[in-house]
Length: 89
Image (cartoon, rainbow, N blue to C red; front, side):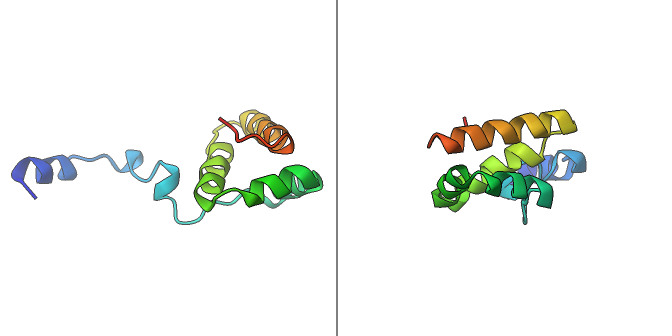
């Protein structure tokens, strides 16, 4: 690595590290959220038929929200989109 790259790496801020879906080791919804999702069989079937990368990003979109209200809103949208065979965007 070049000196400027090393300098940038050493200047990184820990709180801004590992904040993206692809950087997470394990991304899972809470058990209650997953039960709600599974209660809608069509939505759950569509979601599980999608690629693992989509599932990881969509799940991260839901669980990464800071406020509970936002998590609930995102989960509802994900379920609704999945029910209609659409990917959440």
